[in-house]
Length: 217
Image (tube, rainbow, N blue to C red; front, side):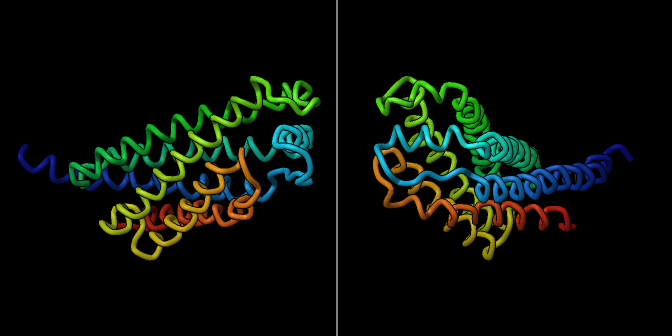
């Protein structure tokens, strides 16, 4: 009788992890879309430091970035839950752990991004400061790396049907690449800023993949 115990408990464990990852991805996706929709904009005038100051002083900064911070944390938690499933192949299990780790880094980065508004007054003169420099590195490196990790997970997970499917793959691929391109160039040019709304497809991908995890048998 003891030899049958692992076979009986394994589906139950996978079911619980699917529920955790599904809830986290659905809520994270919704928070990501809402955070992006309420993100403050700028007039497009002045240099990049002045544009950053213009966004930091707007009342919508804190609500928007609180939602984005929540989404990053939920994504990381949901992807970590996926990595714990023992029905994944060895490579996929290792890859999801790496993506979850990048998610933790992005969550820390978004925390710094959120509270950078406390130092908004230091940017009034329009000259680079520690705050603006931190923002530049945060967005161009951390946000870009996070978006590319989502692209990888959407594609690998869609092909193997471990995270979403081939339909959700397209959502994550397009949304992730758009967000990555907009992030990596934001400190230098406004040309690709219109891609940020397209990046909201990451939230749609997460919500869709989460629903699939919740309904998976």
